[in-house]
Image (cartoon, rainbow, N blue to C red):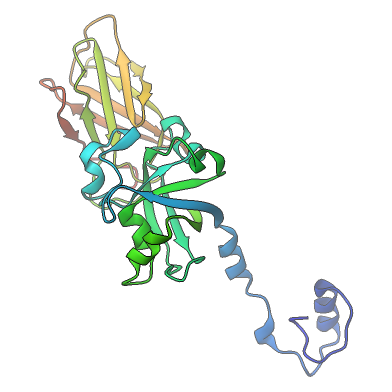
Length: 274
């Protein structure tokens, strides 16, 4: 047993420890105690499979199924993104969630965690058959490698990894709202991005001009895009309320101005962890 050296015992580890406490033997080595904190930390990680797509050092795709468009290769995403299988993409509700991933199964793996954001969907093949599948950008896949061996790791194509959910952190970056190009006076759709904390949203509400108090629930259109279809013309400016997966609420007051235009991005001055 790890707890005793040269001390005869046939008890199970727990009984051996109990016996040791009652009758300490001279051969006890305290360095052989199990590091409980380390084991607990390891338990936070779960197994998954990772592949990569797109250019070797790129962002995988231009926006993908979450709708982030070219923002995926710009700060704060900076190409450290991933498409997710069904358990990660969650029909678009997983867009924006952050994970740490690391690999140790290949000689080129560093074992050092890297943080990625779900920005796309991996809809077929092993992404469906694997319980958890990350289809990483080429840049993110290579970031799991030992320095100088990113190309070697990418040549492996498929690796077993470990992953865990983590909070998103975008210091100094407020939540942004990109108005969908198809929006008009009666239909308003907006892409929400760069949310701290959970990163993904469970609900989005809109409030019209400041003289109204009613919050109107928006529907998830696709990916990270939410919309509101109204029989009457909507009156700007709009305030937008975000509710994350943990139930926390954030309000961006009058973030969409009176003279808003389809296709434009409007930045708030708030974020969940700001």
